[in-house]
Length: 206
Image (spheres, helix red, strand yellow):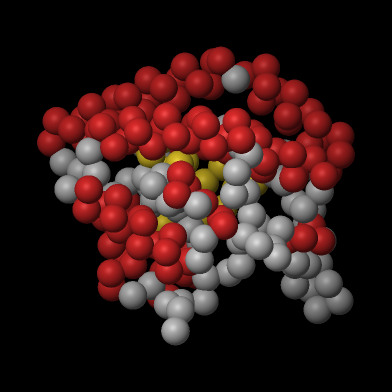
């Protein structure tokens, strides 16, 4: 279902209201997290990266930093497993690293619920069907996050994203938010098997 009309107005209004309340409620937690990152990893505290949003429009996503900026002899970043710190693992497992994205929600870049904004370099690797994930506002959480998150294969994850685009409703968003809270409490499916986070998307699986 297209995100237009009064339903989209309600979605955006709820997003921004929840973002303001969330930022106020979690301010002490965010301050403590920022202090912990600064004391263990140094500056910067925040991770910023360009991501594709609705209709592939680019925006800067904001998260708490969880990895060191370590590189190998060739100058390339070391694997995630070598850069992810103990504090970073904790922040990811509790989803505390996601809290600054409430600023993205407040700015209108993100919704609370929608397909997760992935890396810019993935854009040319999607099939036309997979690319339809950008026909909806990206979100902090989404249908694929509550149906496997990083424990499922890329093709399945992207298929769940396009299913969300086709079946979007305010009721579905409410269902996803409720299930997200349960998954966060249980710390489920944080990483893909054999990986610290998720392997890079190389294109459709054969």
